[in-house]
Amino acid sequence: MESLFLFEQLLFPDFAYGHPLIGTEEDIKKISEEDVKSFYATYYVPNNAILCLAGRVDVDKARDLVSRYFETIPRGNDIPAAGQQPKLPPRGGVTEALTDSLAPAPAFHLGYRFSPLQTGDYYGLKILDYLLLRGKSCRLYKRLVKKERFAIYLSGGLDERKDRMALKIFAVNNNEMMAERCQKAVLSEITKLKTAYVPEEELSRAKNMFKADYLHRVSTCLEKALFLCDASISGIGPAGLSAEFDKYMKVTPASLIGVINRHFTPERTVILNVQKK
Image (cartoon, rainbow, N blue to C red; front, side, top):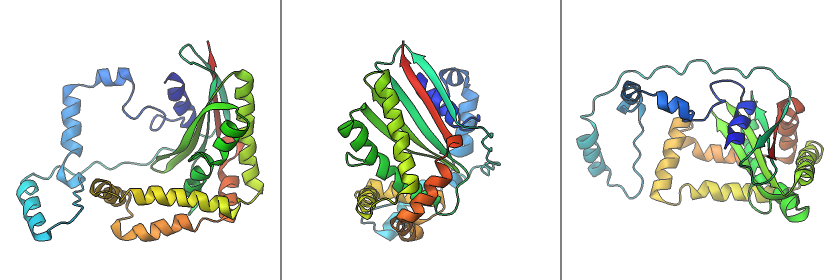
C-alpha cells in the first residue's frame, strides 16, 4: 500500500491528483462533524442528483411515485464551481526505488501520464489498455507471464481522472534480476508499438473484449441504470451512447501509432522499483 501511494504522488505530482481519493488516515482523523454536515448539505441535494429508472417501467405510475417521494425534497444551494483544473508541473521521467518491509517479493510500478489529450486520443488509449493488459491473450500477459515468466503477477489498466489519464502497470517478480528483465520487456513492447502496426486480428480481439465489457454494462437493470447515469454525468447523454461506442470501434492501427508516439515518451514515464527489506 505504501508503494501505491508513493507511485500515485510520482505519477500525479500535484495536490489535486497526487493523494488518495478519501485522503490519508491523518486527513480523515481531522474531519469534524461540521465538515461532514456541510459537505452533505452542499452536494447531496436534488439539484446535484440524477434519478434513473430502468426496466419495464409504467411511465405514468413511475411519474406519480417519483413526484410523491422526491418532489417534496427541497432544492439545495447552487453547486460550487469546480474551478480551473491544475496543470501538471513540468518534469522529466521519474525513476525511484522504495524498500518495503511488507513486500513479499521484488516488484515495480510503471506508468505513463497523459495530459493534454488531443481529439480522439481517449478512444485509442482505451483500446490500447485492452490490447496490452486485459485478459490472458493480451500482449504483456502473454510475454511476461506465459512466455518469458519474468512476472508471477501482473495487473494494470487505464486510470481516468477528469482531464487526466494514466496507464498503470504493476508486476511482481521472483527476484531482482527478473524484475529488471521484466521492466525492460515492458518498455520493449511499448517501443514495438511505436513503429509497427498492430495486426488487424489482434486489434479486433482487443475491440471485441471492450465490446463485451461495454455490453455487460447494460445486461441487468441495475447495470443499465448506473451506465445511463454515468453517461449523463459525463455529458455524453443516453442519446449519444451509440455514436460514442462507434468511436472506439473506429480505432485503427495507424491511429494507435499516433497515440503511442505522442504519449508514451520518456518524459511521461514514471517507474517505482519496490525492493524487499
